[in-house]
Image 1 (cartoon, rainbow, N blue to C red):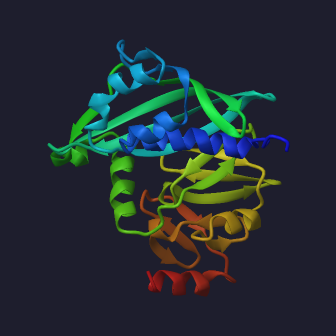
Image 2 (tube, rainbow, N blue to C red):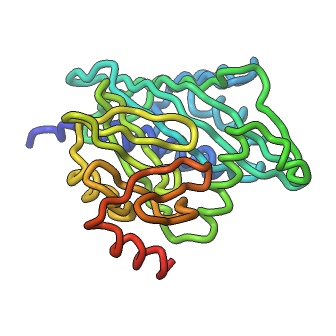
Image 3 (cartoon, rainbow, N blue to C red):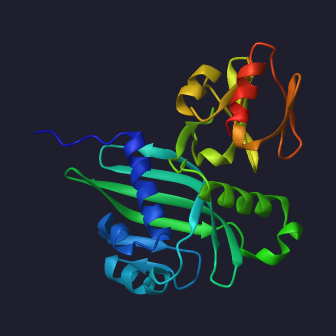
Length: 267
């Protein structure tokens, strides 16, 4: 019987499983996906290990820490050969500590995977912060936070109030796969044959039509032939405009006005 051939999406899902397990402090799940001789390189000088046992010893402190949330994930394959594959990408981790401090860190990653039979095992894991020390802020001074950190704190609170925790995978025009929480997407705009996805921290261009995006993101609301908007962020409606929480104004077509109004009334 022929060995299973792992697809690009399956390899990226394995990468995500390792990262989400690590940050939810399920170290055993990470070890299960590591080769016996896996090299792990983390942020700090001591986080430079060879083999599973060394990794387990070094991560004893992480296993006791509070879980944190992963946001703004992007993944892509560098190469994908018969036995080996490599993934690169970046993501942001954010979490609230016991003393109320919010930690935010942007991380870059490289994974090398090896196929062993029908299994995929990591032989190299490199995750490092894009700055030397994660930023720290106090909740009591939330009004003074930078725009980006205020956004992460905002969506954390919104996400706690919703059941929309399943992440959406969207590929941009450069081939990067963005893994987003539904609450991270503000709106989408059609432009020529492409669509621009706007989030709280930026935007990226995709080849999806708005119709295709609506199938992938059914939580979005069509307000116009050229716009899909997340209703969570609509703070006002008038003929024929919606205003978002950040004061962005987007058009509402006459044909969609009553449907948008009915949806907002039911929020």
